[in-house]
Image (cartoon, rainbow, N blue to C red):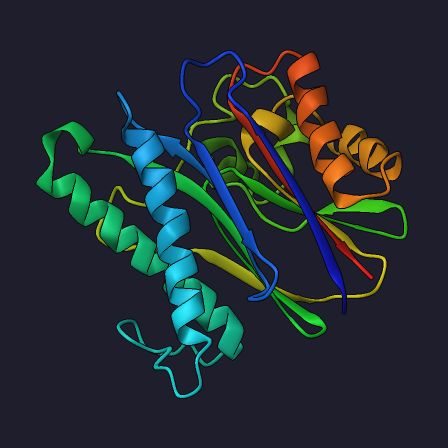
Length: 251
């Protein structure tokens, strides 16, 4: 599999960009985080999350590395899904501990979506309301489930389809960093040539529905153009938040 990647982030109407993202094709790793917290705490949390996840995935890629510490191995998941889940839980621990030590950072947290591609498989982990989509043969599918009050009430039904204007649709029920441990959602999928993946914050999908994202992807061939077009269109549509997107093309 050959991967090409592009990304774009924009502060939007906010005074600070609390989104952070990173991608390392040599590791097969892609991460998007949307921080929350007063002053600059959200920015700190999102940066810590991306750095901690990258650090563990890089370390655990080494031959003989211990991927089970300190949470143990979940036998229902593959090795790579275990690695990614552990990376997110370690990021949570670091952010929580830092927030507990420093009053200015107390209560900080962040959403996280992360993807780890190894061969013809992709491991996905998510906490919060940032999302991962896959476009395959022209059809866009949301691969992650939002950790929001509305999504929990709907029992997994897509909140965008049910009530896109509900006042509580963005109230989060789970984030990274606000408690001592988290159990992120995880899944694993096949990867096929022609697939395109999008990782984005709610500053994007809060303004652009699935149909709009699919249209924008279809109209852009390169990953870089896809990411830029999606974020720019979210800005044009009047997003009230920071907006970030990573687009991965598989050939």
